[in-house]
Image (cartoon, rainbow, N blue to C red; front, side):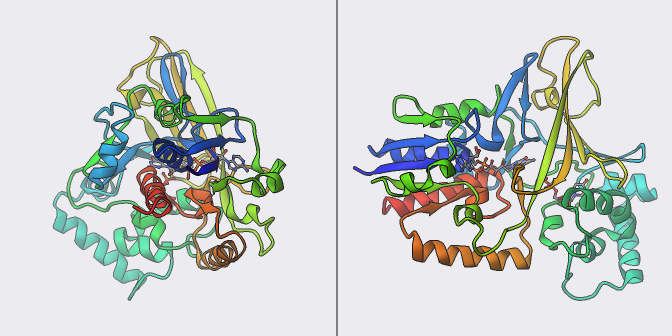
Length: 372
Ligand code: FAD
Ligand code: UDP
C-alpha cells in the first residue's frame, strides 16, 4: 500500500485523502491554517453557520457530484438570489426580466431584447468580444453594464474591465424570464449545519492523520525527500519559489460583525455595484438557512477586495493570457522535475474552480492515481 502526504485540507485535498485512505493507503494531511476545510470552512456563531471565507453556495450540473456531496451532509433547498444595491437602488440578479423591468420599465422579453440590441449597436461591439467590457455590453447593453457590472468588476479585480477576460462575466446567466435564481444548475443548496462537517467526515480521524498549523514550506526538502507521494494543493508558483515569475491572484479581506438585530438586510447576499463603496458584497449568513440562529442576533460579513502580495491569501487566480502561459510553464517544470507530485485544486491547478469542479478534479486525480 502507498503512503501519501496531502498538503492542504481544502476540498481537493480532503476528497483525495478520503479516497486514498478508503483504498487502504496511509495518509497524512498537513494544513497551515488552524482549522481544516480551506475556503469552505464554516463556524457557528450565535447559532448561525458563518461562511468565514465568503458566501459558499453549492451548485452543480453533475448528478454524480451532487450524490457524492450528499453523502456527507443534508442540503437544504436554498436558491441563491442575490440583489444588487446601486447607490441605494435595488435590482434583481442575475440579469433577468425583473432587472430589465426595474431599469427600463419594459415588460416583455422582446422589449428587453430590443433595448439591449439598440445599446449594443450604438457601441458597435462586433464579432467575438475581446474582453469583459465588450462581452458584458454585448450580453446586456450599456445601462446594465454601467450600473451593475463595471463598478463591481473593477473593484473585485482591481483592473479595468477592458483588460479582463470575457469568461468571468459569462459565469452569470442572462435570462429573458422573471427568474432570480443566480445559477442554471439543476442541483443547488446549502449543507444544513455548515460545510465543516463535510471536511470532518472526509478526514475521518480513524483513517487519516491531520496536522494543523503546519506549513509545507517550513520543511519542504524533508517532505520531498520522504518516501511519501505528495499531493500539493497550495500555490504552484510558490512551490517552485516563483522561479519563473509570480502568477497573479486577487485577495480579499473579510470583516465580520455580530449585530443585535434579527434581520439586517433581508437577503443572504447583497452586492454593492457602484465604484465608490469599498466592499463588493455583504453576506448575512442566517439567510442561507432561512433565518436559523439565536433570536435578536445576526452575523454579517463585508467582503473587501485586496491587492495580492506574498503576505496575504490568494483567493482568486486571475486567468488571463499572460498568467495562463506562465502557469503552463510551471506545469512543464512540474512534469520534468517532480513527476511524482500531484498538483491540485484552485491554487495547485490555478483555476477558478467552483466546489463541484474541485471535487470533480480531485476524483479525476484519484482515478489517475489508482488506475481506475
Ligand atoms: P482551498 O480551499 O484554498 O484549500 C487549500 C488549502 O491548502 C487551504 O486550507 C490552505 O490553507 C492550505 N495550504 C496552502 N498552502 C499550504 C502550505 N504551504 N502548507 C500547508 N497547507 C497549505 N464555490 C462554489 O461552488 N460556490 C460558491 O458560492 C463559491 N464561493 C466562493 C467565494 C469565495 C470568496 C471564494 C474565494 C471561493 C468560492 N468558491 C465557491 C470556490 C471554492 O472555495 C473552491 O472551489 C474550493 O474551496 C477549492 O478547494 P481547494 O482545496 O482547491 O482550495
Ligand atoms: N459581477 C458583476 N456584478 C455583480 C456580480 C458579479 O459585475 O453584481 C461580475 C464580476 O466581474 C464577478 C463575476 O461577475 O467577478 C462573476 O461573479 P460571481 O458571483 O460568479 O463571482 P464569485 O462568487 O466567484 O466571486
